[in-house]
Amino acid sequence: PSTAHHGPHPSPSGDDVTDLQPGRGLHRRDFLRYTGLLGAAATITAGLAACGGPSSTGSGGSGGTDTIEAALAYALSGGFDPMTASSAVAVAANLHVLESLVDLDPITRQPYNALAKEDPAKVDETTYRVTLRDGAKFHDGSEVTADDVVFSFERVMDPDNESLFSQFLPFLDGVKKVDAATVEFKLKYAFALFSERLGVVKIVPKKVVEAGQKKYDSLPIGSGPFKLTSASATDGLVFAKADGYNGPRPAKVSKMTWLLLAEPSTRVSALQSGRAQAIEAVPYLNAEEVSKRSAVESVQSFGLLFLMFNCKEKPFDDVRVRQALHYALDTDKLIKTAMLGNATAATSYLPAGHPDYVKASTVYGHDPAKAKKLLSDAGVKGLKVELVTTDTDFVKDCAPLIKQSWDAIGVATTLNVGQSGGQYSNRIDTGKYQVMAAPGDPSVFGNDCDLLMRWYYVGTWPETRSYNSDTEEGKKVVSLLDDAAREADAAARKELWRQAIDIAAEQAALYPIFHRKLVTGWKRDALPGFRPMPTTGLSFLNVDRG
Image 1 (tube, helix red, strand yellow):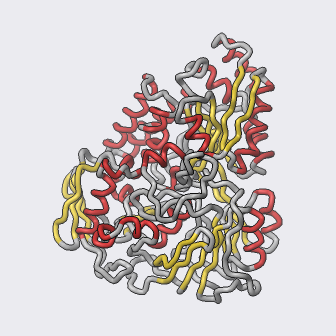
Image 2: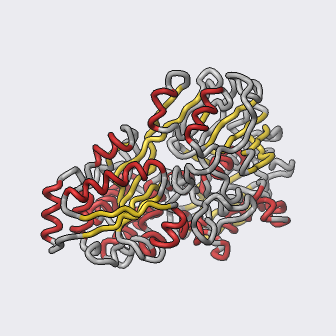
Image 3: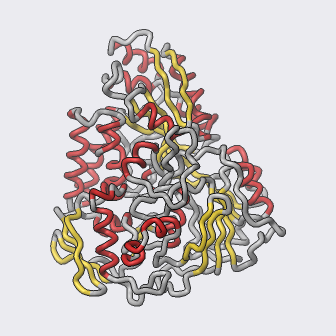
């Protein structure tokens, strides 16, 4: 979802995804090897014991009316350095602690100037200048300078650093200092989404990071409205208001405490008892009961459950076989039974309601007869499939129903359900699999169609997971995305994206079954300005205590 990390780097055995030391970094190759993605999801299991935290002293919580207490659904896994951080907890924390030049609003997903004083100034088609906000300071009191901005971008772009975020900046040629408060960006080609894509790079203090990257990774210093004062796998995260912050989203409370409660019942109890004023990932089964005493909202997300095929293994190299297994799925039953209605069947790579949404030319409705005919046309009889899945709660609920749908068309299906890190390292990234069902959500990094499609259809995933990068269709998707990136006209760009989506849907090498809805619970009176996010995590920007 998933979180962004949603994917920690597990122990060598792949059995435990929660054993990362807080100060340890996560390289891009490790992230991609061991995670199904970002976002909600993905790899933290509900088996983590409930973490400690302040005890409840009544419905108002334990921190008073100038403190926000919240409960997240994931473990602390990996560090916070935004060059590599991708865990659910780190991404949510960095939203409050660090700033980009331009950030995406966590609720609306619309760009706004954060460290940038004003909109980036377009010098020419491939040159932009950005001026920093007057008086912007890091939490150690030092000024945010152009040197910090150049440093922050160059370390992400440096191939030796293997930053996950470099793949989202293919258009960027270089960054240089103009003066103490101004930087200039040179692009390889005109890129219409330049301003909002700046959000993938958080600005860090050069001197502090150079003095000790590991120390910074464990407790980052940013320029955001909150400073992180402590981070512990057992005691959670503690934030304090950053008094020197002068940006557009000031902290409205003096302190925040985040409990890390992977066990769903413990998280619900924290909300119901008043130990927390907000929790993410309200269990679908508990949503109605929780709504009797708290505000509960189910928000549509990009977060998906996808089917991925090993396209170098027969018969899955035949598009008809891949399509057949999609048409066989009773997705409505999946959503109703396993998700309790908290998902929307995929009619495109993007969920309906997304600003770039277009309905795909191929929509996989439940059609067992068509599925059987496709298999017959492909000359496939007596197909036996092992479905590899992660053990994320909702995926475990869906897996038996997927098996039921495939068994019903004569495909003998066995399930291989396991911890996400182990499944990726032992089966997926070794190519020892046929079909996988897993969650993912790259939208924590950005929300435009280009970024979302590049995650699954350019680079690592098609090259080393679905193994369709060398096909004519796989190459065409990359070509269309590259053409769209250079297209200045919005309508023409959307048309190129439509063509790419149509190919992705028809080929179904990796394609969503449904897009999830995320259920958040909160005390409306205690957090009058709070709104749930369409991605993993919680946002308390511009939120005060009632």
